[in-house]
Image 1: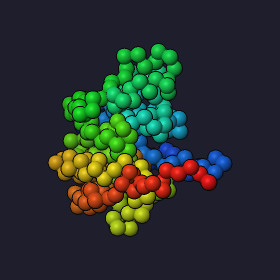
Image 2 (image 1 turned 135 degrees about the horizontal axis):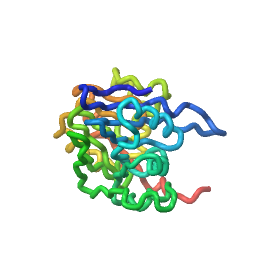
Image 3 (image 1 turned 90 degrees about the vertical axis):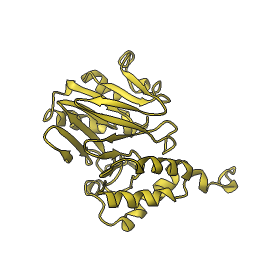
Image 4 (image 1 turned 45 degrees about the vertical axis):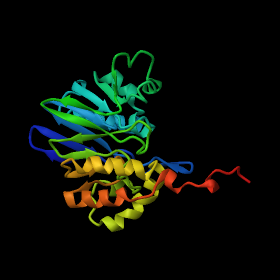
Length: 260
């Protein structure tokens, strides 16, 4: 079921938080993940649409807003399977182009049938870019090493939403992902282990935070877990993330040892 993050009658931003259920196979559960759809002037862009588990529901949901073949873009923050493993189906059933970091542009065809991606993958340069959508635009913002080497977040300046990929992500049950965070301190334990392992370094975090502070952000919406709503809550997160040691900051000689 879609959750409306923004709707002024012309510009709509939707989140899908429940398309990946807590189903386990052997010892492993599929990680909860969110997918996003932005619609402007009857054109659509999907952000991090996921894999086979999410494709059918997303495709059907589009019919309420525009003909699916008018999907203009799939925007991929990076190349993980939970981000864009469904690329082949979008290539076959829509006329969209896939926007992804130039580092991963040549990896996406590995998800697809031979020939499906010809002329339809746009490599985002390291400095980011502005992507027109209907009468508005989406801004691809550099988020390199948070966590992927080539990584982008997507800012919707009309809705004032920052779709922040793995930054701000929290490991929660599917049922808890739709509701905005109300108690930031209580939410930290769901974020901290993930950020400390997945984010490469505090240096990257500080650079990203400095950039984001210059934007008008009402929602920070990660790809896993619940969103952060309102400028005060977004500021709480930025202050926390800016000082968080993570990744190589926490590594030492004891990390790299031959197993006993």
